[in-house]
Length: 157
Image 1: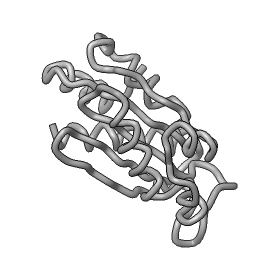
Image 2: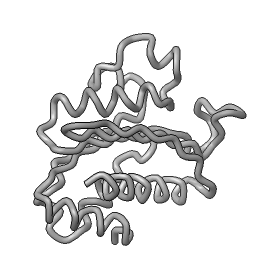
Image 3: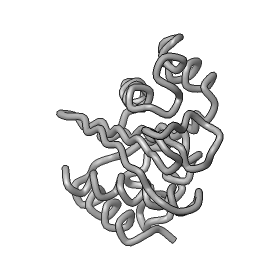
Image 4: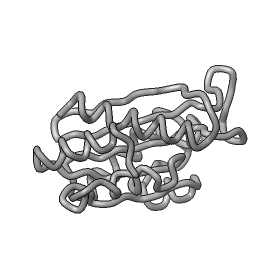
């Protein structure tokens, strides 16, 4: 069952007749799933793409070669390109890109610790980019990130 924040976001999207799509990495499809569990989600959810491995980001989302090597797969720059490029190809009003480090073993550093999540949201007339650092285990970090996306969308619509 979706969180209260995701439910509120979906209900607002339904009320405003807005659609949404997702380009997910760290959340590995869970964001799309959470939004799909809300009543009448078929009216708003266009779908999503899970691009967990760098090759998917480069091959399917057209992240320019060298960008991931320069900034890392879990970076604001790559997240922005994921959202922007997916938004160009998918007919939805809102497109969310999400990457990050819910577990050790990625590009974590002292400045970018485990728990760092990057979110980039495309709207028809603006873009929102945010960086968060969440505490907890992998599932908790992803759930907090999904709720953050819902909150950001609610603030903008």
